Length: 134
Image (tube, rainbow, N blue to C red; front, side, top):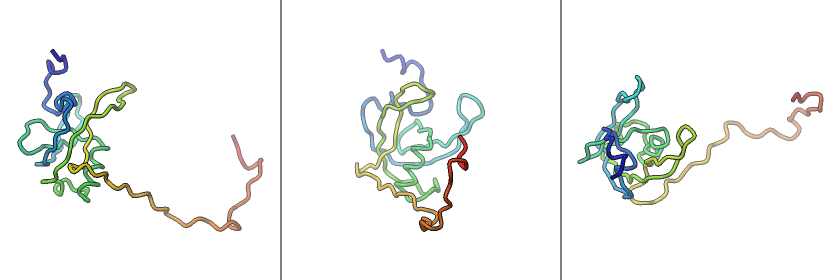
């Protein structure tokens, strides 16, 4: 018996995927109260599935990259792959779920653009050892 299955949850856990990488279609996303405390988090629901995936910042950012929109209404109908990875939570290694492109192609990550142009060499203020405090 898998002890993790003895404690069911209304939210999707890594054990629910059980070594598979299912491709699912986003049905909806809504803010919901978590079981512990008054914390509210976005929860993603899928076509034909009961349990929702509580979104963390990493998965939310991936959905923004995949859909091109930060608006959750624009995510509906998007097919994604759910994969299990090892990660760290509160200093302990755990298995977590990550969102990936359904077609397996990597999502291009754009390098951050500089907010200002580099200064000319003559424009840089020269510092002495006395100017730098440790």
